[in-house]
Length: 372
Ligand SMILES: Cc1cc2nc3c(=O)[nH]c(=O)nc-3n(C[C@H](O)[C@H](O)[C@H](O)COP(=O)(O)O)c2cc1C
Image (tube, rainbow, N blue to C red; front, side, top):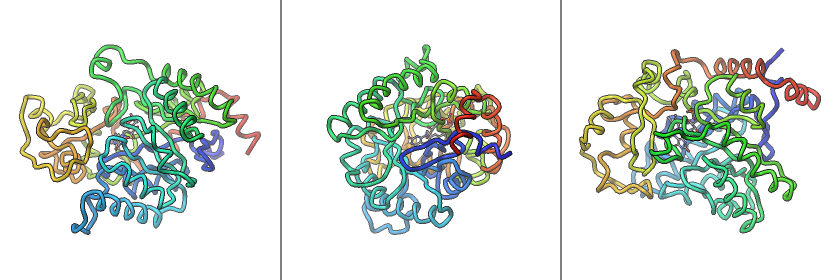
C-alpha cells in the first residue's frame, strides 16, 4: 500500500496536499526551485522564500525592489519548469519590499502566499480578485483571532489556513527572548487554542480554516501527534535542508549533520527577533561583541537599523548559502542536531508518511479512505 495516499489530504483552498506536509519557506535562497519542485513533485507543498530573491538576479541595472521582484519571477519560472504541481511563496511582513513581492506573486498567479514575521493584516487588500490562497503564520491564538477578525471586518474574507509556529522552529521566532529562556508555551497547546479560536469564524463564514503546526516537527510520529489533536497538517523546515535537492551548499547542510545539541543557540537578529542558529566562529565573534565590517546597500528589513547592527544578516545568510562559513552562519530548528544524513526528498517524505500513518488515530485514516 502507498502510505502517502492513506493519509488525509491537507486542503488549502482548491489545493490538495498529500502527505499533509508544507515545506516551510527558507531564506536566503535555501528553499529555491530545486527543493520546492522536488517537494511539490512528491505531493507535499513546496514553498519558495522571497527574501533575497534579488541576490541571483542578473540585471544589476534595477533598483533593489525591482531586482527582487524580477529575481522572484525568475525563481517562479524555474520552479514551474521543474514541476507542474502547485507550490507557494513565503513573504515575510518585515521585508521593506513586502508589497512589491506580494504583488509579483499575485501577478504570477501563485497558488499560496505564506506570510509571517509580523501580522499580515492588510494582505487581502493586495490580493483582491486573485485565487491565491492566503496563509498567515502566528505564534499565539490571540494573533490568529486578530487576523481572522480584521480580515473578516475589512475584507470579508478569512485565512485559507493558519500556520502556528512554536518556539522550536528554525528562522526568526515569534517569541521574546525572555519567553524563550523561561518556559515558552508548548506548540501543541497553542495549536489547540488556535483551533478553538478559529472555530466560530469557520461556522459563521461557512469556511474551513485548516490549522497547521510548525516548529520542531521532526518525524512521522510528531506529525500524527498534531493531527490527532485536530491539526490538518504540519510545516517543516529544518529536515528539508538536509536533502539532496535543497538548494543550499553542502557546507550549509553539513552544519546541521555535524552539530550537537549544545551547538544550537539563539541570537538577537538585526530584524529585532530572536533567531536560532548553529554556533560557529562567526557567531562566536558576534557573541563576544565583535562587529562585522559591512556596508548596507539597501534597507531590506524594515526593522533593521544598520547603524546598530553588528553584522548584515542578508549577507551572512547568503554567504552560508554559498558555503562561505567564515563570513556567515546557518539558522536551524531546535531539532537540527538529530539529523545525521542527507537524503532525497522522496525518501524523507515516505519516511514521514509511514511514521505518521503508524501513529495516526485510525478514525482519521478511515475517514480519508472512505472519501477517496
Ligand atoms: C534555514 C531556515 C530558513 C528559514 N527562513 C524563513 C523565511 O525566510 N521566512 C519565514 O517565514 N520562515 C523561515 N523559516 C521558518 C520555516 O519556514 C519553518 O516554519 C520552520 O523551519 C519550522 O520549524 P522546523 O525548522 O523546526 O521544522 C526558516 C527556517 C529555516 C530552518
